[in-house]
Image (cartoon, rainbow, N blue to C red):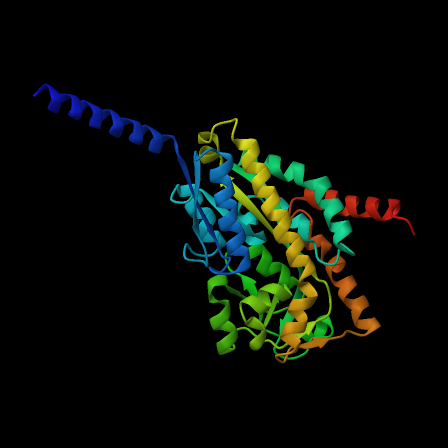
Length: 336
């Protein structure tokens, strides 16, 4: 009888230890639109493995990829409800948290990646403070390269694009009104419906990066790519502040470092392979539409013509002003 009692106590002790260890593990449920099986999804999976390693098993990432948790707006809403803890979000989702992030992708503001990176370094600290005040911690920023217009019929100039049915992120009325105010015809839809909408003709134009257009096969329904670097497609990895605070303080710097390293590798790989993606699509029928000099000037003037609709109304005036000011400062100190 004594032996049975000892075994029972030992079993209870082992169970208690196992339960305590499970309770000490922070499970981070992260959702993203990144397709399952893609290189980006692989990078996020590897990031989760790194989190577990650097935390000594105290942090586990559970990834929901491919839009199974909904589009970015759904992900942000579910994070606020507590059914998710984190997200790898595009600009639309980030803007649902704070619209200041829109200053990172003001169309035609940046001449190249070097300028965009320099400006981002200037304005992201203030953005991160705003996110923190709203209950989100930004673990890393990332961009997916230059967004271009992919259209069913060629769009060399803004006037030609104005005849198209242009996909627009649903749920952001200010975004829709901005396009309408500039004379375009936006069709608001969830991101999860883009492929179907392009296939049925509900939309016949979309602004996205070459890599995403190739990965999602959207170019098969919109075979013309306007050769204009319209804006950077900005993204970010964010986590709910309450979940973040459950992670031991001594572990958090390593989690941030691992996340930023993953984001840096993803960004560098995306930028390096941009031309390869275009060439691959060209081999399957993509037509790169080259604007004339006059057309290019029209593209450059288009964003500034709607700045009064953008500053303060579409995005916070302070973030807009800082981005424009930082861009001017970069060009002033850049060797000519």
